[in-house]
Length: 162
Image (cartoon, rainbow, N blue to C red; front, side):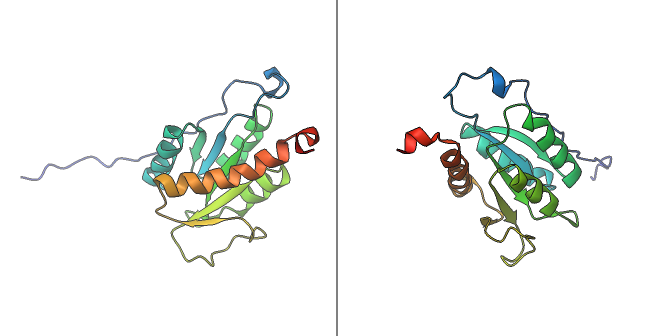
């Protein structure tokens, strides 16, 4: 016997930046490990976010659109910032390059994730790493950690490098 189910619309929720403040940290304290996840496929977004949370990352998002991502970047800028971002290349036909541009403008490293060919449109960001979906678990965490290390090395005071 078949039981008809109602049509369900899965709408990912937008998680706003936490209420902590960068100004409230003591000098020399490490930046929070925050990762922005921009992915329009809800199940993939949740898998990525779960893997990152399990590894100790604070996840901002996931968000499914360029507009939501840019809003979250602006909110996070005054609230501890973003360490790194994972960007789906194609958001329901919309290219993610404006998000990549916004992150690059404030010095946040990112990687692209795609289920398409590796020669996909990355705009001006051909140097940004690219992972092919599905990318989960250790492979995802290694890629995110490697990209985040770029930011951490830029944030070190000059005195430490001497």
